[in-house]
Image 1 (cartoon, rainbow, N blue to C red):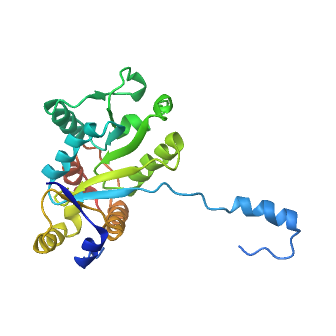
Image 2 (tube, one colour):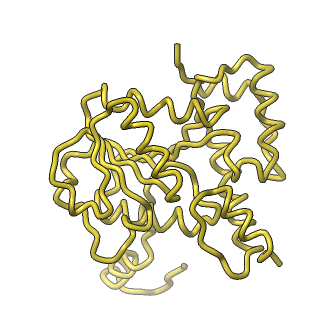
Length: 239
């Protein structure tokens, strides 16, 4: 059976994840109006859903259509998009693969789109906003700016309350950048199974720190079709 590792259980792993305006003497009316200028905008919250292996992450797709609720899947890389498409077709899951979401004319349970097309100026999914119950992003981009651009577009299009999840596995190339094998070994020793999913803010924060570190060491980013290829191409551009 597939399962989910609870927060308490995750905490028990004791993960050691990486190296991972004063206004004075202003009239009340003016002060109140000024506060609005400095009010921090609420950020879109997201959850990392993490598996030990890539295969288990993809198996998660099988149950998406069974819930009977419409979901939007965003793939950060073209190769990932094709892999998802292959798995959904093989599993006979009803989905629409749209180069532009505006071209989707059917009413499937799952809409699949690339991050580049989702972010493209003029691409809009506003006509579908009332139907999606969750947005799933397959993998993090190695550079945090790309994730933030996706989250900002999601917030602008769907609002702040829609659930957003990143699907991650410990053998993702990004995770390998900060000692994921050591964490994976620890989890296995503590009894975590391949088909179990875990989520913990400690790991999410460590992923963000790793992305920020990568961003600071890359001069001129080269495009890539997969997370693995991204690191192969951009390693030579690091300072």
